Length: 298
Image 1 (cartoon, rainbow, N blue to C red):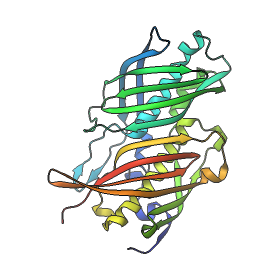
Image 2: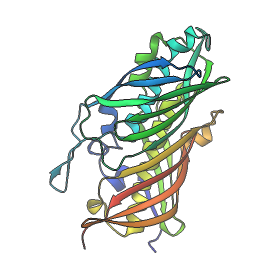
Image 3: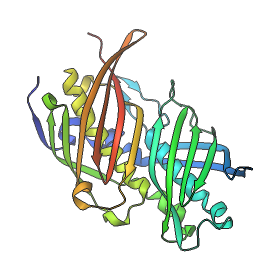
């Protein structure tokens, strides 16, 4: 088994961040979700609408081929946050929340479909939303992705600023003090972020967790599979579930940690998927994930 590897920054291992999706490209995406909420007799709401994503920056090339953008886990998380904020008007009219409260996302589950969504214009959105006590849960299909989101009503500014909140929901983070231990199936790093921790909404914490865990997880996967960075393929997040902690602790925010719990090899046509199921933490979020990449031909 490969020895422990350390690096001062994640870029030393994965390459310049500006050319990588989880390094910087994810921040160039513009997500939009347009939905209608239809009241039902049982107190729930039906959800229907469309969603679109536009990437300002190209995803670049991989092995000499232009990469095609597709609906990402990050896109889904940010759309679910928008959906919660769009529901504010309905909730306010129903007396569920006041002008001095907001609807903040606290948990997501995103499961990829059997094929990626590469047509990012007007993807169908459908689902339902239910309220119990002060909690809201939405179960939503966005394109081929199935998602679940939980929200809580809490004190905060009115939603006049919701557009600004969404536009700033993709924090720029850096990873330093990277340690990869293949024998233990573990990777850790220190998270660096400019924004004050207490100012970040739930979706920003979830996105930061995905970014941190995906990058150190990618290095861990490549080392466990015994392949160099230049031969590793684009990551496929098969499933992600994240829980935002109710108490913001600086220590838990500044450390990212992923652990591989299970490894599977899945033949798909002429290729072979290497799948890692595991759990992680970081940015005040605990997560479970299933992530894969295609092994290079021998």
